[in-house]
Length: 447
Image 1 (cartoon, rainbow, N blue to C red):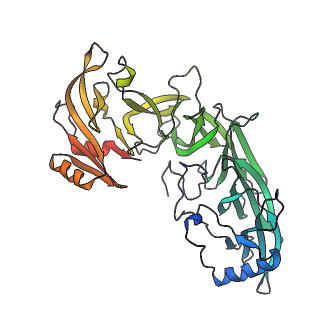
Image 2 (image 1 turned 90 degrees about the vertical axis):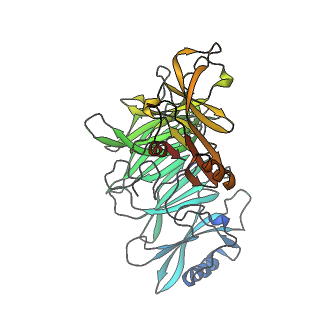
Image 3 (image 1 turned 120 degrees about the vertical axis):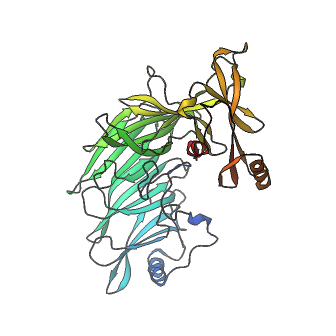
């Protein structure tokens, strides 16, 4: 999978906006009943009961590609499978975590329990089996959520000489397995929100051939109280067409605001490419829900920042419609790449054509968004623009009968998804500003 800003199959995310994972990622908690055990799993389960007792219940990862309570793999590359089982036991002290991990291997064709381990969290978020860095060993990474659901932990294990060894224990707010520097190997990447007295921080781990982690940590200037989203995209270096892979971190600051920091990873080091500062304008601070995206599909992520639509800078606040500018990072600064109308509620972004910039504005009319050419030389007495001819009407409806009726009135059906009908009506207006249907289709982006 090559999408730059979507977290790929190995990406881990623990947030509500989080990074989607590839393949089947449904939560087992949503199933009506636990899946039926295979013959091999039933055999392992019987051994587990003999070892841990009959008052146990299997526990299933909540997300990811490995949704079974049983992991059966050749963990040490010896040609024979080992097994790991996740379960809870009912015979625990009040202050003891009931979540357990049992390690089993085979002797003479029969399964046997080797050891039991206490889990590092209250629930299993997901389980991954990967090779990290230049080291050939297979790593079992178990990610957990804590009792409050806000904090997360992970443990990195490898199996050798009959023992499941923990090589790294982590606490974090967001975590990903990703090739951060595009060298063909995976790094383990975490971001931790600020928690007094510690600031927010990002950390990358690369496992060397000698079994030692090369660790790089960088404090984030923003006082992120939570991590909303990790996004990946190309970051031009300024030398020809050369670019480097970058990490965009959307973090919560204050009650509901979001800010973005930009990093990249090279030579086993994380480096900060952009963060907000008081002497920089604009800053990335914005309302929650405005996510960093590769909005124009060019491989580089853009950061959304809200302002008012053209022509309304001197108008009363109540009459202003929000316009979203999309910024890219260049030489530790933000450069505007595109402007748009962003409707998070209806799940779309309309990228304003470049020839409309500073001469076309927008306002809501009868549940539609209407774009008008306006007089750039004069304003009304109340500070609002003097509108000329309308150029475009955008509407979103959920009623198929209404959608059909609007198409008979000249609206184009732009897209149908998630029970919504996206429609646009092109109006004559100015000859130089009028859009072609193909331009409208290209300008519409769906969230």
